[in-house]
Image (cartoon, rainbow, N blue to C red):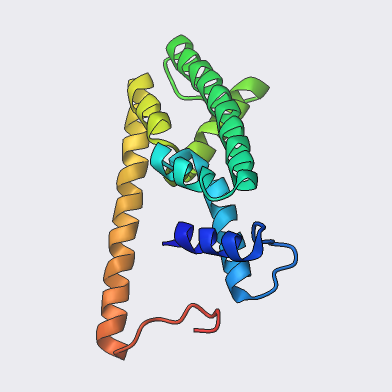
Length: 175
């Protein structure tokens, strides 16, 4: 639906929505949505990319830039994951963030950041993590289970709030 709204906006205005100087709430929302698509490019399907490319030539160019950036990120991901796997194979343990060895500390920090942002990874990146090394796979599995449990807990909290207050919780953003 947002893609249709974006296409309609571009057809009416002849340009992409601006985040810097939006003329109205609709333009601001569409620009924010486009920014979100760029940040989540690794999770978009080929069909979604094609829909976005078909909206406007400028957006097609921008989407291609997202793809190039994702390809660079994927290469860096592959290299760092290979380094992590090699470290585990050599040392028979995960890298430690308290290590005096800079490269070990960097691998530990990278893996921690990966575990904190699993929801932003592409399906291919998740597959690589789950199949790279048993120690990595177990930690990824544990992180995913914790995230799922947190989500379930939040759903229960929202359900309890609705039952008690008979209204939706407010986000503080003009609800």
